[in-house]
Image 1 (cartoon, protein in one colour):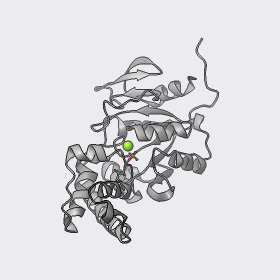
Image 2 (tube, helix red, strand yellow):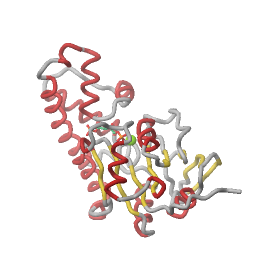
Image 3 (cartoon, protein in one colour):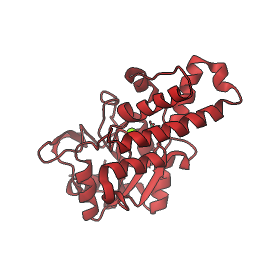
Image 4 (tube, protein in one colour):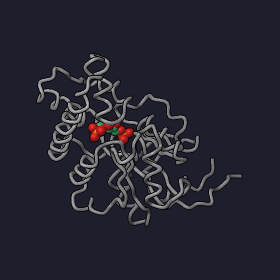
Length: 260
Ligand code: XBP
Ligand code: MG
């Protein structure tokens, strides 16, 4: 007989990059390269290299990691932190410009699920490593007026000392919302994000994207190609069983009620 959790689903906590939208290849990567060129660096992150660099979460941390790989002495010099900070300020400006120009769109099913979740009384939050300005720009560009007040809690960037795969950002969001992990589901696209969610005790719906399909997501409660639309059903597995459809609040409540 199936076992059921006694904590009903109260909230959905969304990662941003790769989960709400494919922001990395045509957004963050391009913005990093623009910042490098602006400051006269000959660094250029092509699509393949950027895919490898994504193992390091956080833009400042990613730049420092790359710099150490090509010039360890320079990256460890006293003024390295200041250059990384300046590059990151410029990168954030370029990213916001790109998003505002429509360079990235929400993934299938995201807008529908957000709207349905709110109508169904589920609370919404964000848990991401990216900079808060980037989150607000994406939500504004993709959802317009509807973005205002949609998420009651936005956990982003340096608000916690360590980035994913550390669970800190999820724990911070849970504390802000006064919820236990069993009352929430996380939405992620990457191994680091899944580890962060699991580390905070959350079950996760994983929708891998361009840079993360093919990774191992054995720890995911649900593993789907995307969130689906009625005319474009998602495909994958939920709690070990094949599943197809458009992810909606009723499905999520049923999944959350199952006990592993
Ligand atoms: C997203 C990231 C971020 C962005 C860059 O990971 O790793 O670092 O690539 O953003 P996740 P910043 O989706 O797991 O949160 O440059 O603003 O750090
Ligand atoms: Mg992500």
